[in-house]
Each structure stands twice: as structure tokens, then as C-alpha cells.
Image 1 (spheres, rainbow, N blue to C red):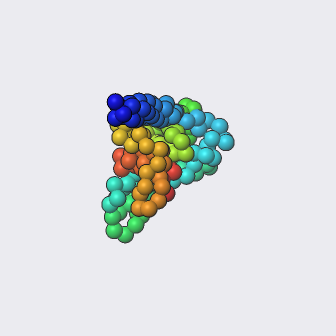
Image 2 (image 1 turned 120 degrees about the vertical axis):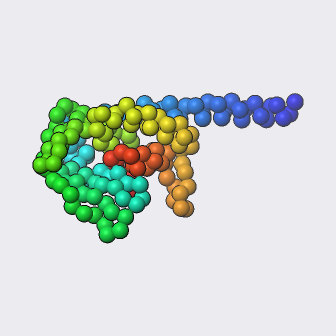
Image 3 (image 1 turned 90 degrees about the vertical axis):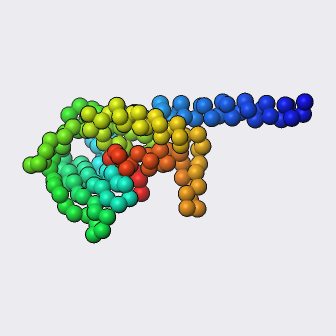
Length: 168
């Protein structure tokens, strides 16, 4: 009887705590309005996709200019293109360069921003949901002796496939 009394509260707290946090985190991925100057300043900066060996960055400037650079596993960054961007809708930006034209949706999650190509939004949402299910159960993780929030871990897990700003 004593074992049941001890296990029952543990089971109930695990059931509710383990289910509640991921559901809350899923609701925190929101389209971000870049259509005003204040939000554009928050949004501007360097977005990165990297698998640890290579990748690329987009540096978005508040003046309407962007630069894309390749990251090689050896030798650092290599300049690849630059162009202009403009706000298409409140939650989308257009990037124009001599080489290509792209439309990206902008999402915010905690202090992180994601640039997602319009054709990849559904795949991103599925990957985000999987990351939340995997990493959203605990509020704090220890990584290399440092404490990292579940928000950081979720954003970090997605930066190998999607452009993320806020990963330092």
C-alpha cells in the first residue's frame, strides 16, 4: 500500500508535467511581423544553417541589404552573393540578387528567429513539432557544463536544416 501511495503522485506529476510543457512550447512558434521598424531592428542580423562542417549564412541589414556567405569546413566564410530584401507581407520577406529570387516566411520562437522558404513551411512545422516532443520535456539541459534552456535546444536542433538567428 505504501508503494502505491508513493508511486501514484509521481505518476500523476510526470503525466501532467511531461505533457504540458511541449504543448505550451508548440504554441510559442509564431509568425513574426517584420512590417514595422521596431520589429525589423529585432529581426535584422545573421541567420545560420550549419551541420558543424559547413553551411551558409544570411546577414540581413535594416537598410534593405542582405549578404549570403558559404561556410566551408576548412577556411571559414567565402562570400557568395549579396542583394536587396524587402518586406513582402508582414510575415514574409523577398530576397533579390543577381543569382536568384527567394521568399522566406519569418517565425519567432522565444528569442530565436527562423527564415523558412515558403515551400518548406510545412516541413519546418513538422520538424519543429518533433523537436519539441523530443527536447521540450525538460526546462533545462546541461551541455558541456553549461545550462541550456529547452528553447535553445529546440532551436539548435533545427539549425542544421533551417536558417536560425539567436544561436551563439
